[in-house]
Length: 350
Image 1: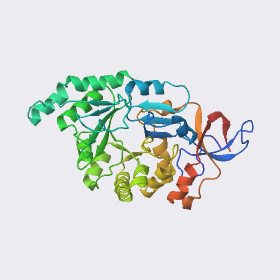
Image 2: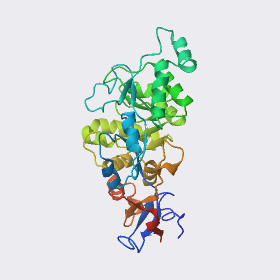
Image 3: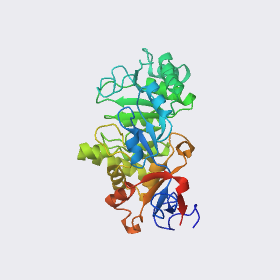
Image 4: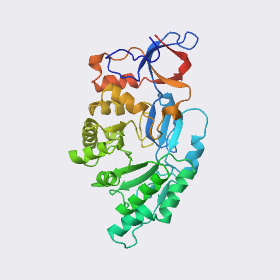
């Protein structure tokens, strides 16, 4: 079997999975299992968690979505794993989330005034797209100067004020002009719609405070928006909220939406690495095992997976679940939670 062949034709793990054995020259010589690409947690906070724990649990790369720009830039330059991409500071309205949260790291929030200034809606939108307000440009430029790969905005109407539409448009336009995608924390009634209407590229949490209507979900999927799952925090905290988020993901995925695996690591007590609760919730949301693997291996926010390539691969020991068990959430979760990172050269096709 060649290194480019899938595990088995029709097995259900998709084209990213390879059947391999470990080299006879290393630890556990000859152990058979499945090789996957390096896996990514697309929503973490490294100032609030231990990166080493994520790596020990099979995660090779992470996307930090809220930190002091200088601090996260320093963390990202550290040699070894995990590979890191990051947003830098939260951009929010004056008094907006998470400016008053005790957990937020010092220097991790930038509060931006409205660009409206009393203008009509039409005038404000013109300003947002053609004459961007200085503070907005400065905040976006600061994140880029510290090496950010994405700009994050906070739209949390439950916990404070949020950007008006002209200011959000200004942030999106400034980021786009600099080649950076925009990711939004959308929480509260109408916040997911605000982000979708403004053309935000990614929701950093699958919508969880309300059931989105089918037309809005279809529009988000058609626009190419991606959703980062973060379902395990709701499974842990509130079953009803978890069901709302899972149902939204189910319909978004069915509409062709791009789902990214992410846990919000640093948000309380979560299993680091490949989180079995997150995986199980994704399967409950209708993602096949191959879809879950794709969500874990997606290179966002870079267009290429080269940033995750550190000469390593993911190895899941033992046989994969039988094809008829790949729709069982607990089975898929237990299998993927055994993932470990190994040097790619230690794995050979079998």
